[in-house]
Image (tube, rainbow, N blue to C red; front, side, top):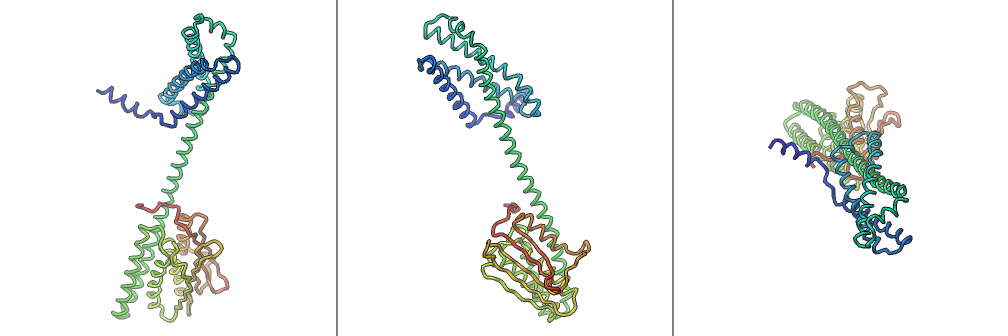
Length: 375
């Protein structure tokens, strides 16, 4: 029982030939038989007798190469270093050529003796002068088969390796994207709860309205756990709730303006993208600059390429040197855009004119290339 169990897995591990292999085998050797028949007919005539004999010889070549394929798989030669494989195959091909030529001579001699009623050694005596030519022909035939089979195997392995590399790269990108989501949302939720605590003394009516808007924002933030993108209109609703909370805090010191093209509302964007830009604008605009802070949100479709263009502009100055804790939001947005859309999406930040900082985001009109978790 132990011996049969140990042999079973080894046999199952050997690759079984598929339909493509057998199609190539039968098609290739049959074509070889027809080619040999045509060349013999041009030289000797009697194509019918030549066809039968060449089909028998081609059948011998098919069986020989199929057995050699099993030998390659059993000995794991295809897993060797290419240089080692070339050396071993170079030594084996002449041996295969001799076996193939011997089988061809035997079949031809029996065919001539049994069907053509010639002497048993007449064919051999006639072919001895062509012995070297027949060996070279057999060497070329078997060498071509081995080269085609091994080349096809390596191309297949390379294709599978590329697919595995793509799957690995996608998994790594998804893991990094998940890390960015985890980094962004707790930061936003902490700030939201801190602002809600500051509004608790404003009165029950304002506090109740603030709690409702905060709950709506937190429900929206959960979309990032299952969706790689959301409608821009859905994100804009969450931004409106967030700005209403900030207006309760800053009152007349914060002025908000929106210019949204209606066609932009149905475009896909990464969750929390616009929300992070607006929060960043208020953090470095209204929170750190005295006086009135003007915040503007623009969104439109670029007619030249159909991309969604979003701009968030706020009163303030662009920081040239940032501490490690600053600028996390924009860096996260930039990296998320790159993970989802590659070089097709971009984020730019500039202070032009002086005193107004503008963050511009351009998103292509397509779904991201990274797989969505759970899909």
